[in-house]
Length: 149
Image (cartoon, rainbow, N blue to C red):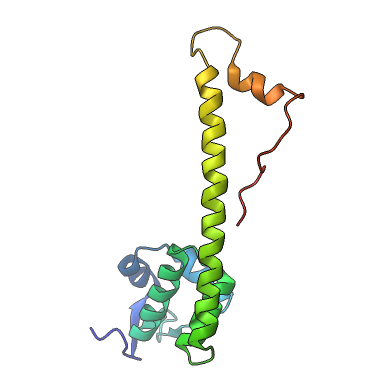
């Protein structure tokens, strides 16, 4: 099948199965306008074209790279001829910077947790190093309570 075909032949469940997503994902992307409202069969079934399949694959791959829905709109803008490559590169570089910041924060959390686990005896007593650490009010909290998005 030519995936760029404009002929609508796939039902929603078939589209979801082909792309490995669920029906709710497709409904959501339609609701927020990333996917167009599909054509309908004579019996009222939603029908998707090869172009719809290609667009959904694009959306899923962008989301798989961690781009936000807003970012995906911008990426689709380039694909639809409404954004420049320069603006998309800026968007992608910003996204990469945010990923690196999250990695640093996660590495910090991992090290803190490892330090606490080293204190844990792991025996059957009720005295637990992790619980004691969480209850210790004297420790300054230098770790972010939330990983940046």
